[in-house]
Amino acid sequence: MSDKKIRLLMVMTTIFWSGAFITGKIAVGEFPPFALTFFRFLFALPLIFAILYVREPSNLLPHGRQWPPLILLGFVGTFCYHALFFTSLRYTTAMNSSLIGAMNPMVTTLLATIFFSERLTPWRLFGILLSFCGVFLFITNGDLQLISQFRFNKGDLLMLTAVCCFAVYSLLSRRYMKQYSLSPLMVTAYTFLICVVISIPFLLWENPAAYIVSATARGWLSILYMSVFASVLGYLFQMVAIQRIGAPRTAIFINLVPIFTIIQSITILGESITLFKLMGAAIVITGVYLATRPESSVNYATIAN
Image: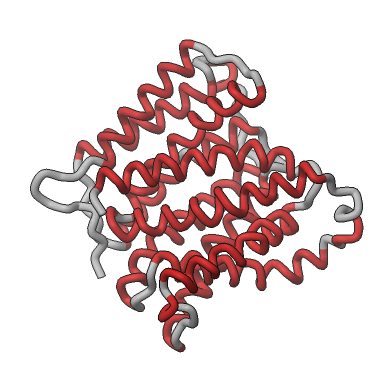
């Protein structure tokens, strides 16, 4: 698959993930964090395993040595990230959460450089910084007063921890896919399954009887959207991209999520757009292109074994 097709897949992924912010906002009013984590991936299991059975029947059951990396990826990248993310929304503002989430490409690249001997070119570094500046401008709408009101709290620490979990997951997944002969589809399916299993005791601790009876069809449909589009398709496309172009170049696409979230907010919720948001969107897109374009002579996205 060409780099152009990979970029297209990741753009689609960011659209799916941006839609999850809208549906997640609906669902979080009816379900607690661990329940959202559990049901989101429980609903995704039949579809992802059906795809695995049809496309890769030989990979339907992992071998003995493949279980430890799958368990680690499922715990860190699926369970921990989502549990921390949903919990952080109880304590922090949307602006803080979005800005910290936009740090994911930088955290991923930093960890790749330190622990995986990733070579960081000046153009890629410039693209990462440029896209983060664009996200900052896009979210704050150029309002310096909002910037001065930024405060760091418990929710921010939880979100920062979630970002680190997702960065570790992204980096380890490519390494483990090579080392243990794991396909992107197999990783996606079994990390979902492991997340569901780990979530069960936490789900019971939240007392499902207290909210399931009052949950509306709107809330359940919101979870279903996150299951099919944000989880099954989003995670699968991300795994394919990580395998092909590496975790740091894949992670930079996350900066497109706020842009597509605003576009969907305008078209679905009727919110307005401003000049600063348009400028921020253009800066982010430029930064994403600079940070993810193929190098002319050396493939710097390869992570050392």
